[in-house]
Length: 84
Image (cartoon, rainbow, N blue to C red):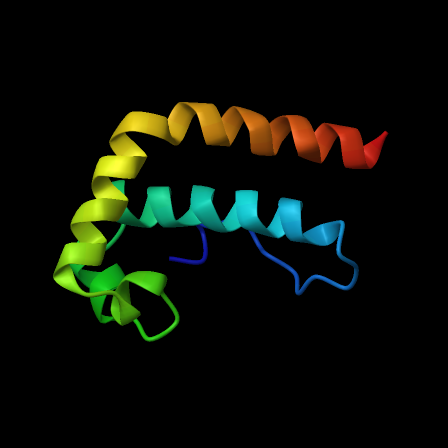
């Protein structure tokens, strides 16, 4: 799994939150598609899906389906703004 994921350092400043969020979302996407799958994300204590109800997971999937490309583009734009 370590070969699939991007390292996500602990944020030290508020500006780091955007970078860590983007890297975490990319890692979760890779793990769900190419790694051990969604069932692993659901059973891993460090994953937000471990702490969600079934209804919350359904809401998250619907939100992801409708808005994923939009919020990923915005996170990438914010990452570029913070580095400039």
